[in-house]
Length: 113
Length: 111
Image 1 (cartoon, one colour):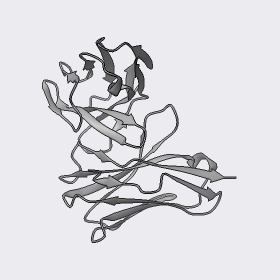
Image 2 (image 1 turned 120 degrees about the horizontal axis):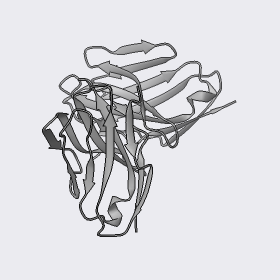
Image 3 (image 1 turned 90 degrees about the horizontal axis):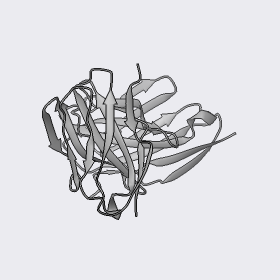
Image 4 (image 1 turned 120 degrees about the vertical axis):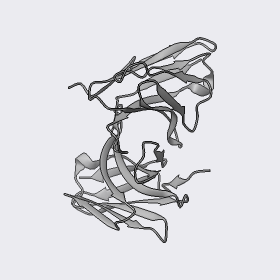
């Protein structure tokens, strides 16, 4: 049972445009959400997070939106750059961010120059 | 500050062999964990530790053992390797919250 779902395995976006990556979850106990970015042959790196008490969190070009009623979050990257090409994982935890993360299956983002 | 280090980077085992994947961190983080990444499955938690001497099972613990004798080290032991354990293994650490720092991974093949 996949509690965190990323239904788009891949996404291609023109450089300079907006990239939108989506994530859905089924466990209503999740209250802390994170996005990780992964390059080939490297470990994932933390990108941005959001607590369920917020509906938006912004960090530079990256914004995460949370819709609790729909159990849906999205990551917006504006403007997209070639270095953003990577696999993006959505992750969730309960208890406002304990250490046990449940990951989605990832979305491969390709930025086209 | 090396962060999270993992050795070896690559390993090939025969079915039934045992081995230990090493993980160390120099950030004095209390929490450490092991994940495996398989195609189409994302990362799945194998075991985790909230401090020296304390370990617990994650989502997919069968076939793996861990111990945490020091804050710095968190080795993962495969007791009797099986082809189903072919995967990429990531170790991670964090101070308290969920923003974990991952190592570069160990690619394991069991034949």
